[in-house]
Length: 252
Image (cartoon, rainbow, N blue to C red; front, side, top):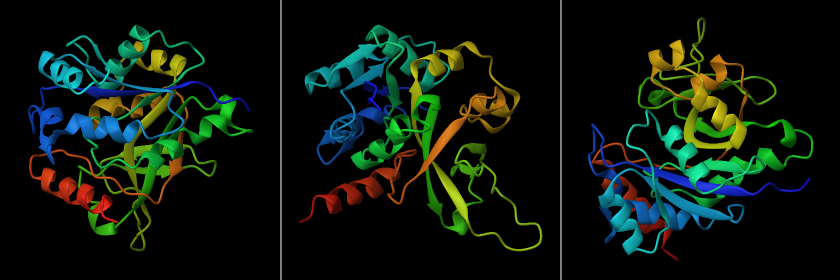
């Protein structure tokens, strides 16, 4: 099947309760947003990668590095809403697949983006795919952490549920096969518009997981499994971890 045009958008905001100014945090002499953009741009499926922000400091830093950037509203409740506004500013069509690339993943493997968008070009299921995301195996000792979002899948590879709790729960025996959700998303533009038009769901509010809005409204989310690992930056102490990862990835 013909591959649809694919647009990568990196939402980046300055305000963060746990790490204000996170996109501008310096890693190996460059702001985090530069590392994310550089790695995303190495994905061959993406025809374009753009930063979307509501903050002049982030805009100025991006423009100073030659990174394309669009200014969006400061009123968005989620990064997904920001991505939609940016896609519309950039003139994306209904044929586009919009890829939401988290701005706090400076160690992102470009091949993970290729895995993320692969369902849209599947000869059998591609035309029906509306939303896609990634998951990977995780150690059982991490499953109890609410910061590590878990996902369980149906037989067809679509998500049944996402949770901060350790799901699925082994009632009669210890369960060890947990899947860690990786917060990268790809959407058909019409699915992204539908998401933004829907009210915040009860489960979404309870878990503080916006992807549950799709499931609560019967929109299937295709999950691709990856063996690759990434490391997001949630707190300042995570900078050391991703710095080591980036240094190791550049070694011969």
